[in-house]
Length: 141
Image (cartoon, rainbow, N blue to C red; front, side, top):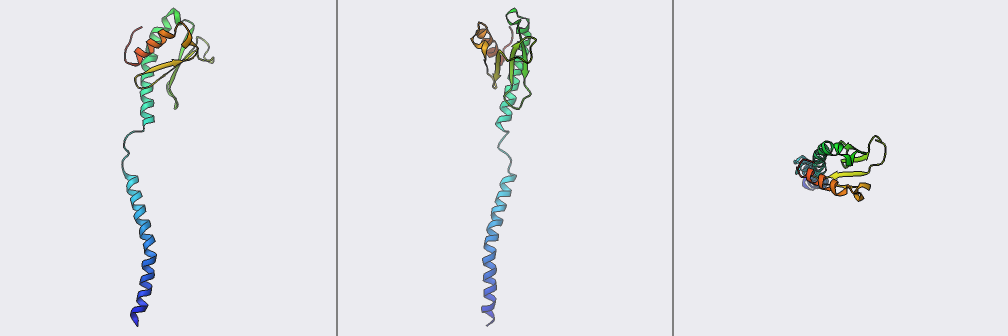
């Protein structure tokens, strides 16, 4: 007579423990996967750093070459390298920092390109060849 009474509570306890055990296994698996190291640095951060590095090279050369050149006498260069969005260089009318850029230079790890009104001017070929050379590590005017 004693054994039927013992079986019922044991069976009820087993029934209650099955969902709890399943939840514990699931939580343990999630905890282990959360502790796993990431596969590598975020690509957004590394590609942004590479673009900034490329634009720093272009900026240094542009300041050294263009700002002393008569063809660029009416333009200034404004770097926007410390931005969380796309880093860029702005070519603006000299002495008018709030005016619209005449060209915007953007870069990736080893490439630079530009767009804006100067892209259809006589300076377009020179700008393109200069920034392409500088972005790939070249120097000189």
